[in-house]
Length: 418
Image (tube, rainbow, N blue to C red; front, side, top):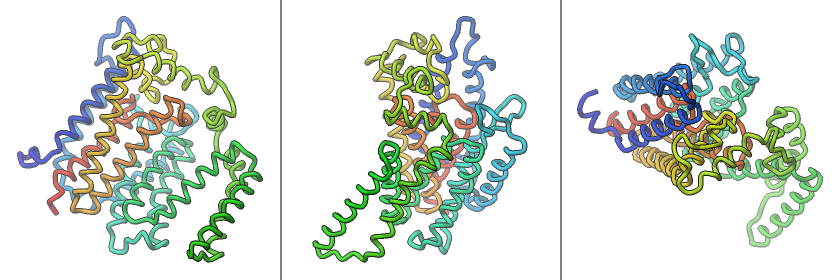
């Protein structure tokens, strides 16, 4: 790297990234600590592998930061196509772990292509939205944009890996930022609310409630001299009512039993602290026991006793809550929030639309991971197997989000260049 690039790099964002990764490694070490461990470089335990992955990330930083910013836009479609091929290849050469065929295993190292598909989708979406025909007010173009997002999503659903699919919903933020009508957002949120309410109540009651509410809104708006065409009003009404009667099929035929159980527990339909709800219950106990300042590094009883399954991956935040307390938990939340803010602020300063869209995609996916993971550990959202970026154990996730970070830093450092 030349000195000018060195000086243009956003060192604050880079230091936040390094702080989160290093803090995460301390907590990964704690989750697998036992007497007799040789230390952070023991490749037989998760922390040793995580240190190795992090070293690889630092090596990747050099060529990515030194690359021309235009390279990523020029080859975005090719990279995206290769990514789709790696997802397809899983059905022939992938290894099934925990019921999902989501990994390639090469020399003892597991690689999860869906993590890298997030990067390639961000690149190709940016390329499409900066093309000459780009216009998200045009439904045909909007469908093209959604199709590029759905192609990897469908392949990931078939693995099946619903957790990664949830994260891809973050691209919606990017589309709305780039001009997609907000009516679609309101409609999507409305369908989500209907989905949850229909799980709690009979679809006939929900439909009657929708119909009565629609009639009330229709007459109130028209009395305010806001004339609504009946046809345009009836279409979303019929879609909403039809959707309520499809919820049962979606829930029972598309979702797996473990996902149905988790939804039922979150919604209070079922109570199971020893079965499906065990992880979440133990996580909440660990976090609550940490108090203000925590029990101290390597002193968490829930962590040392291995009471929280998958604690070094999906439930790493429970270790933070127990051993570092409210202050440590607040540190992670504030640092992650500040990081997302800096990425968005940097994106707004971009002179190049492609680079702005990529950075917005990075911030959106980072937020989805962060929000869902913290929600899982606190029992606020169903467990869907999403790691906490930069902190949870996992080579593919760490490498993928590090690549995201380095490309973003490259774009930010070169935002005044062609």
